[in-house]
Amino acid sequence: MFRSVTNAKWTAGLVAVFLLLLTACDGKTPTIAPLGRQATVLAFGDSLTFGTGAERGESYPARLEALIERRVVNAGVPGELSEQGLSRLPSLLDRLQPALLVLCHGGNDLLRRTGEKSTAANIRAMVEMARERGIDVVLVGVPRPGLVLESPDFYEDIAGDFHIPYEGDILPAILSDRSLKSDRFHPNAEGYQNLAQTIATLLKKAKAL
Image (cartoon, rainbow, N blue to C red; front, top):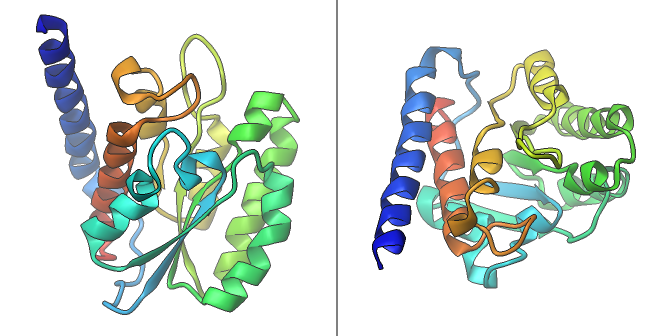
């Protein structure tokens, strides 16, 4: 009982710290176009976007939709590599014509050690593909496996090159906390809620909301 209360307090404190850090860095967050009430947001990625480890209504796209009161399409495919995602993305962009792409991809590449150079090239191509269509992008970094979880530098480099909003710390934090995970590689419902809240806060800082 004591441990569960302590973990809950620690988790709440962790999320509060991340939200505070986002607020503190407000002047450094690139701005994107405001999202109209009828705008569609495309959440694109693999199992982390699909919501593996939680019920369908508990995925981060479902939680984000409730938080921002805009349509969020969950386009997560478990097990997908970034090369496959790059092939899948164009038809979704053309069919849905979203105002915003939330891109969280590359985790399976990192797990299978397919090579970070090719992963970075694929994610960069996805961002470029969306931007060429006039679609704003928010990038979410995925941690590489290891004792200390952190997102590879190429995510931040890509975000900097395209001057797009980026969040690279929340997934490493969630996946470092047993109380927020369903297994080694996926958040649970509470973890996905924290991810959605962090993305919603980033969107507010980027003037999208």
